[in-house]
Length: 269
Image (cartoon, rainbow, N blue to C red; front, side, top):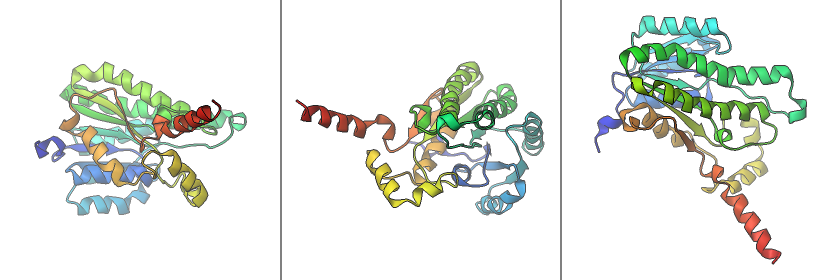
């Protein structure tokens, strides 16, 4: 198998939401594979340290302000990007947020914040860069979903709605833009420690409970996502579009719950 299938040398990637967490994992992985990077945050000053890290890998890097809940901000970021890099080959729609509450306590504003950020924002950022991709007849769009794109969890009603929407949006855009040489896929991580959920991982009992539910018996590590994002960004995935790639250790299979249910049923016979 040729290494060129995973080589991103000469490609330019935009990764939204790169001030911390998974966004930095995705951006770093693409840079290591050869891509130049556009990094975004609502506060671009927090990106300068990470930008230096990307430059130390021998890549070009540009940090820009982006609020995905604001259409003017999206358009300004896209214009600034295209001024520096005339062609954008890869977009990773990573910017997102979450509100953890029982469903009966979710407010109108909670709902709008999560859906506007995770779903509406992803669409309009994709639209902004798809125009150039259509003209060039080449593009790789990777929407970041979650295991909640395919499974529901209590206390996450707006978030699961947004991530389920990302999966459906991915399929729609793949159908819309495939004839222009653009692939659109959803990368859906399972349980990974991030700044958003780190408080959960401070509870050893909860981590043990979580690990027991995951068939491979551990939460995800950064390196588990690195090859997945490069695969979807590179020529290696040129005939894959509209798909959701779950990187979740198998938790979405429901294997443990099915086994427990089976044991309970057997014990009553």
